[in-house]
Image (cartoon, rainbow, N blue to C red; front, side, top):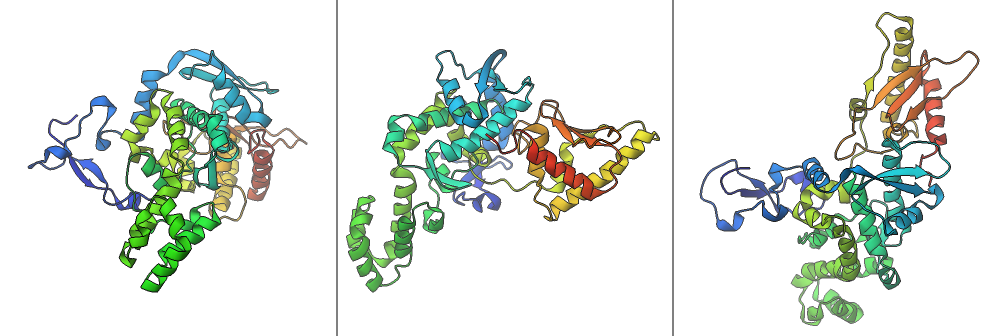
Length: 425
């Protein structure tokens, strides 16, 4: 920790581009000088200066404080009812979110040495986003549903539980909340005057917001007040009938805030209560909201070839041996397949291969427990054994002596599509 008070600087442009308002700040203490007391930031109560800690450090500290390495809970999961299985698991009176979950997929003989858990939490976040009924909107940019029956059934609370459970054990988050909604949930005030209404799930609301946004003249305003005045007033803006054209950007922002946040405030509150039930995790998110942006919003870029290759190490045979020569033939074909993915001339993606090898579609925030590897096997005469992987060992096994990239591509494509966990629940 630094001895003096900390200064606040504007958020970098790359965060602004992802929905973070440029009137928010990050922390800097690189220069001495007079400081205003209002900018003093304490590390008390878990509020950690953003420059002093990254997401990995935040999550590692949370895990050290809450997770019991010596306590294991067996979690029985039916793939075809994955979300239902997960909710039943956390609803048991004996369930403890601090225990290490050992995932057992029904009908599969595999010990969970890490792979099944990574696969389970990845699939759970997909199911949570699409099937629980608490989110709506296009993939990667969702909002909370306004569903009183789901509220009564405490589905939002369970959703918060499941997300907190995944994060606490090094799993992913949904990476799908609209960035403006996430900021509002964290007590921030995003610039909603520029909000893109096309991302909203309701076409009628899109149309109404478009009319507000296009209100530029006195005639437009009169028509707007006649057509939508009552609806805008019901959104918490009774001043619409006394408004001027100059007020329209602010009224647009108020309506957006009402629709994406205030309207569903009870649902959001139940969701955050669900997360806080597991170690006050939502409070930690709020205190470090910029660090958590990549977990909750869709900021992730597709894996590049360089980033994908950096994940792996190679288990080559002794240099100069016949095995080594055959392995280098295969790796050259492997490089050509990676070029095909990079050039987008195949449906195969780097994420597909990562899922196949590790069970995860990205490097976890806390990293993998060890570096994934590529190993080799001997193709038996007259046999065609596809590449295979162990998600627990995080090792991809490739056949030696593959000199044709098209052949290796075909084998990898079939292996990933036929693998048990590939997009199947």
